[in-house]
Image (cartoon, rainbow, N blue to C red):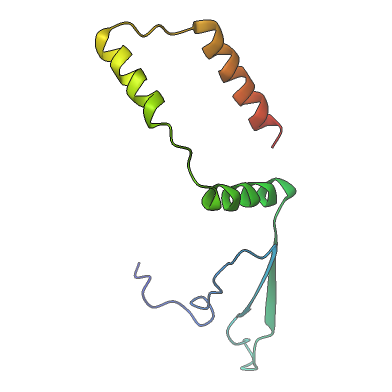
Length: 105
């Protein structure tokens, strides 16, 4: 099936932006009696979770990354020397906290 020749109205797209509500008008073609088809309005509403994720993404995009180069160098050195120890209880607590944070979204 070739998708480069779409029926009238299916090629009309409206790019989505940072707005919370989007409206796009599309035509549905012609009616069987030859008359003009009605214009249908589609509307998308973002959930509160999606809005929060969008806000977080914008915040992260504008926040400068911290300089962790000294800490990373120390970790790399400890791993290469074989002296790095994994604290399994701390790791499990962090995973659990991360999962709880995800549930809260």
